[in-house]
Amino acid sequence: MTEFLVKSFVKDHENTEDLQVRTRYGILSSCVGIICNVLLFTVKYIIGFMMNSLAIMADASNNLSDAASSIISFIGVKMASKPADKEHPFGHGRIEYIAALIVSFLVIEVGFTCLRSSFSKLFHPEPIAFEWAPFIILLLSIGVKLWLSLFNRKLGKRIKSKVMLATAADSAGDVIVTGATVLSILICHLTAVNIDAVTGIVVSLLVMWAGFGIAKDTLEPLIGQAPDPELYRQIQTMVEAYDGILGTHDLIIHNYGPNRSMATIHAEVPSDVDIEVSHEIIDRIEREVSHALNIFLVIHMDPVETHDEKVLAVKEKLKNVLQALDENLTFHDFRMVNGQEQINLIFDVVVPFSYSQKDTDRVSRQIAMLMKEIDSRYECVITVDKNYLGE
Image 1: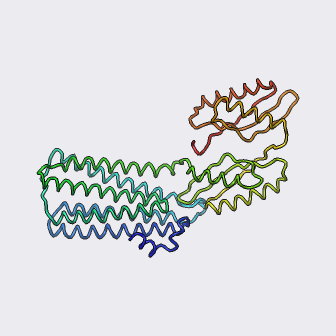
Image 2: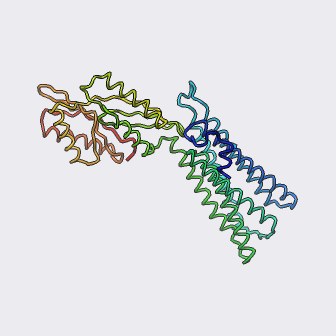
């Protein structure tokens, strides 16, 4: 059914990197969610009204609120697809994260409401009457909600949409809540043991935990999380594969929404090569890597000495010093400025994220001291960096 709906309503559905295709996926997910929840609400409410059952009508109202989640998802996807403008030069993609955050609060609210009701029943238990009509309706609801959860999860993973995954979790929460209700009814009917309140408390906590997990996953890209290691290494590998590039460092990736990323990287080029030749290579890399990875890439060019034996020898000594202090230390942007009585060694040191400011200051002093022991004329001018991959 999922593939049938995708092929029927999502044009060019295999090109999931395209923003318009992602929007079509989002609209399909939202519309299916709205239709399913409204149908469930209508059927349950009519039957509940005919049977004068407040429980069924209350469950129907819950489906109506679930339709609101799909509407929020629809609005979020549509707004996130808006093109960049003067006020938002990097587009509106992060609105999708905000929509997912709102849905996560709805999931938490469902869990909290169920928890409050369960505690009330724990101290004031109510008898559970078994009736076939409500029971079958609950089973039907579980089936629809389970399919809806799997549907949104499959589409969400396909296009890496947090709001769809949040909506899937919302539906899964309903499946758990309703499933626990069905289990309680069966146990009470067969054994006369009422575990409705206890089951409700356990389920409520699980649903709330899932809601907090969605909120955490959604907040991370908004706050600024470490980039995907695979994408990080892809960019590094592709840039360093070009002739004329000796190495790379200081790769930073900014996320402005799903499939909306910008990256900057420093590329090392031989200092004795004509600057126009290196610049032409850099321009070509920017174009080709940006197109291949669907990412906006900006490259800063760093000239590196490759022939001066004295400079290369000092770089090797510096490398040995860093490795002796901590094998996780690396350096780049090394320059050596000679004077009659002083030789300035200018470079950046990359320290692990676990380093405190005290650790950083200590290592900087040790590097300067050990290099001065090698040659008293060496004066280290150190800039401390951290790896933005977070490793």
